[in-house]
Image 1 (tube, rainbow, N blue to C red):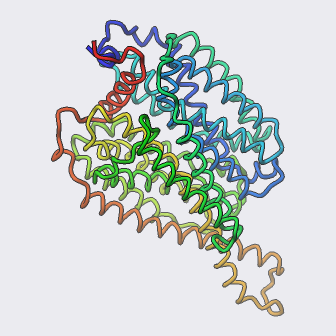
Image 2 (tube, rainbow, N blue to C red):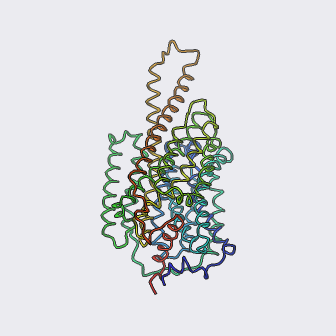
Image 3 (cartoon, one colour):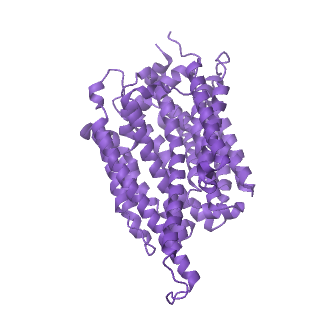
Length: 527
């Protein structure tokens, strides 16, 4: 019998859930805090900019650099848990996150803030697969569906409500209280985790960590992020800085791909991209997530800058997403049996298209005007992960699911950065273009009763709103094309049905975690 058999079916060795509450509370709290520290600043960039004496565009980096390191943290989990054991890795992650919170709460320098966000992002990314593995390993198989719902909501609920909490803190005691309030909670998570997670010796004979590959991947991502964050300011590839960072990122990615093809234990495996359902499902998953993250960052900023709401009310526009996403995500695994994965994937993007197409933004909009579109966006997000995750893994053998899932999760998490950066860039460019065209029609000697400075401000608001509406319509058409591609090009998983493939989302989580458990532990050989 293999070790993963014990981990997944040896319920006799697993304590009842009511006796395992310290583990679930401690680890779940750490997972939730990682999401909260990422989402808490999502809608308060003007406040962050004021506290760091920089611009809102530069304050956006505190989110994008967090996401870069969040994605990188995912790649650290398999080797670190095998080498040091899950308890040590969990404690290290909580301590690193707590240190990052202290630095974020005290610094007034943008670059030091980005360093602290690096620490927080790495810890938060590592905790995502680690918490999933711990929850499934320490719960009976009969409760895995319940545990999977708990795990996904512990990660997503702070993401949906975090911006509103961050906005409330920013308009009161200050945005740094996001980090000061997180600090004692990180310590609580560490204490509970130290008491509840069983000690494991780790495997000192494990092959060395692929440090060269990790550094090449880090270098490529940072080069790409510098390009995305600074391209608009410096004129894209007309600037030597942007050209050099782009070439640097390209060289680093090429060297990383070569390194991974030669390494005995690569961080990521890209040969799964030869499978149609894998690359197409991953492309659609990244597209939906990237557009959603981009709008989740841009819409609150538009509400604050153009409608005049403060950071709290600007963040409230994201609450309807939670109202739609959380209930639907809970029942999504059951719906797949009624509707089918391919139809669910197409329906998801139809919901995205309906959401983007139903926005009717204007300079006199109220928060109530965006409730229904945001609710539809929440329904779309709630139906995004289950069908596309099962579709992209439908051609992957069960033994390879952990490696395939690590690669897909890394790419999916990083795709959020691309969405945030591109929507921000094209919103800015569209606003500037529209404002220029409208100003050309102003006669400074025969204007209306409005003072010229006030008229210029109103035109700026109108231009920003027009640019936002144009981008929303573009995303609507992209979502419609994605729905068509999902329905026409995806191979229905029932045609690829194999005994070892996951047939529902919970089983996919079990296979991913169970296989990684078998691989990670020293006793993972067949006895």
